[in-house]
Length: 209
Length: 209
DNA sequence: ACCTGAACACCGTTCAAGT
DNA sequence: ACCTGAACACCGTTCAAGT
Image (cartoon, rainbow over all chains, first blue to last red; front, top):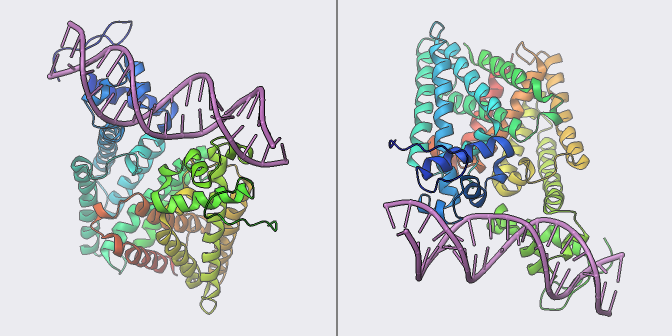
């Protein structure tokens, strides 16, 4: 974070923090017009630099989108962490439920960013940063499940399967939303989040001992 | 299916069934090199026609890929139907489990085609053909769940939530695979199908009364 | 009826040359 | 150190003109 922070408005900035400006502009464009609209050239145009300039800061379009994904994943994990803090009172399984709901709320509120995080082929999955953050979430889920199991709150069955299943359930619901599949499921777009949370609730209830 | 069926090999076919040839070539290219490699121009080159020729048969690249998706969805539904036939003996919930396994097996065996079916932005989701086939699968799931419920095999809870949840679970597992997320889950690619079927098993067991 | 081939407005990426 | 601007090899799509 250097001291320079030139006004992006009006004309006339040709230097400055192009790297971060690119990430921010990409995040904006994704929100406004979807992933496909994010071309390196369009970003360069938006920031008033030449088509080749972004490549001083990112190896490729994929590398740029990976940086966007890392930022988005940070916000997702923040949302999950906040959901966890607000749910301190309950037993492990209801905390688990709360972080699932936080995950779903964020994904439904930020569909295109969720898409960037989750879609391979658009980002570089070998990114250590992405992997670390993903591991952090998995660890949180594991700990909650393990303590639910050791406190006898969990139905018989392999704990790893419950963790992976819960993750796949939330991931599936979020992707069904961004892939536009709730419509063909008889669920209106504005009811999709509510329906998803209900589903999550019921499946976690089914996991209880 | 017209009588003409010119040899695609060697040189020299400029007419023929270009429409179906395009769909077949697209399916091949998807399998060989992934979705991104499927450009209209590359297909035209492969079939020895000019860049504009495909547009006599499809409005757009999206329309072409939608046709590919319809074919792929047919094969997926066939796989599911076959799984159902082979599982006639059991109670409704174990039939349900079998079609889930059939779904997963197909998705894991045909990842790029599953991607084409499921990814909006690449195909036209308003396609009536796609919607009809999707409805057919949903109806099958509904019937099995309803009869499981009426025979008292199902745990208390809203039946619709179980159906949507089961679908989201299978969809999520399949998409986690094509999105390359099992690696960061500590599951090798060649174990992903087995792990997914186990998860499905355990969740269906949890739904039992 | 179907196809060609040129054209238009885009891409991602590279690289000499400028400051 | 960072950026420009031209260049290369691609796209999807349109459309007159050919057969």
